[in-house]
Length: 110
Image: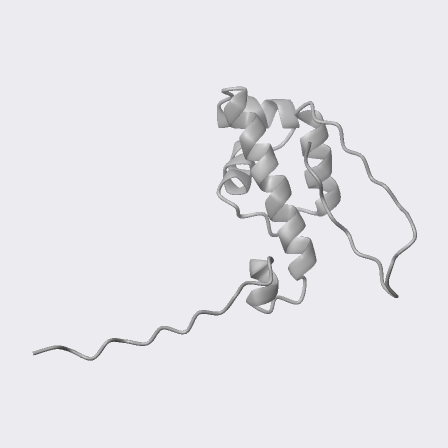
């Protein structure tokens, strides 16, 4: 006997999973996840252990581990930007007029 097929509803993402999950701080969470991914990428590309990365960054190894697992609540954006810079990446912040009433914050990785 044929079983009825289950209908699965597909909802297109907004491009920000945190907004899709209705987090109040969705923009900040997305930026921090991008910074965490960049930190992880640099640590891996330089073949640093978490202990070596922690020493270089001036933070605990457990915090490096949490960042690399995408657990960055409690770490501010400014701190994460500083960590990226300590890993040898230039950080550039550009302020200009908004095209809308409220401005937005975006990250761009070279």
